[in-house]
Image 1 (tube, one colour):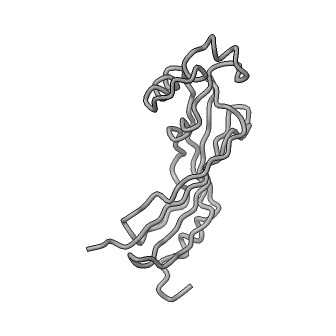
Image 2 (tube, one colour):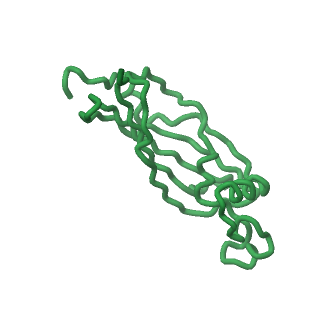
Length: 154
């Protein structure tokens, strides 16, 4: 890294530190409202009778429902060098459905920080992994996301 690096010792120390948990009871009404909001009329999300007859065995949450289940506060904090931020994308991996009556615990961990030069100047990339675990301790999904911070453009 160059002398001009914006990666601080505090950022490096935050790598691998898991956040406080966010704990979320999964309710039928929330699943139905979410499915309606995203325009997904699948019976798996809205019709108990039809969903019970499906391989899912009952109503489940749509995959993107995870976006509602935010983790708790970060335990390791650091000052951000830039205010501007872009969503660099997310990648999900699913292991089990989220069902009505589940309680999902979500935590996030900073897994890496690095820099790259760009048109706008030196950009800071932060890679996070969010884990979603049900009340049985079963990992139901992971989300790997990238945030890109860059200098203010005046």
